[in-house]
Amino acid sequence: MSLLMTMTKWQGLTLTSFVLLGLVILGRTPLRLYRSMVMILVWMGLFYGLSAGWVWSEGNTVWQGHWSMSGLIQAAELLWRVVLIFGMTRLYSAVTRPLEQGLGIAYFFNPLARITPKASDFALLLTLTLRFIPLIVEEALILWKVRLLKGEWPSSWLKRVSEGMQLIVPLLLLSLKRAEELAENLTARGYCSGKYRPLILQDRSIEDYVGVLVLVIWGVSLLVLG
Image (tube, rainbow, N blue to C red):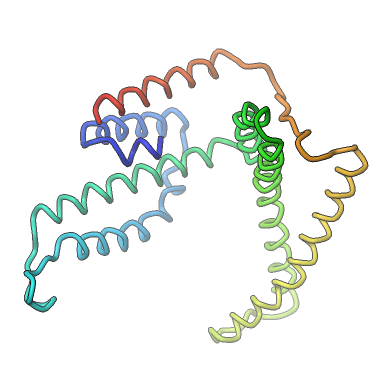
């Protein structure tokens, strides 16, 4: 869908905006999940507006330019696409657990495994990455809380950076230890290259088929409107 966002016109963007709004309402996701995007989008909007909206003639300097309405419209359309892509990504990560994301990606890599065994290895890599990112974040929070128990967090910016750098080493050691344990478990279970297959933890329900149908209709509509 993100790829289609780069090809469709304003009609497709309008359709996607309504669909995304409906999904947010149906998913009952809190609006605070999107609050962190506001500042990033503001800076991106300023950048796009200056780069596309401020033009100058050949031979003139930058400060001798002027605002272009067509450039500002182009910048607004580009920012609109970015907002929709960021919104869909945030919604997907909010309603889908990391393990389910990894299993879904690995499932779609299954046909490629018949062509090359590297597809199975890549699917396993994505699954493990998505699975262990929350664990690494949790361990980082634990290390940070342990550091707070030892004393007050410094007020100086340089000292904060130094304290943060000191937390990287134990976090890296914990991650390497977890990776070593995982490698030993895979070896003990007889895993070899090209033999990874995703597991379906539950049967497909009617909601799954409805979701696939909605995505197909959504994608076809974007292609038609594009």
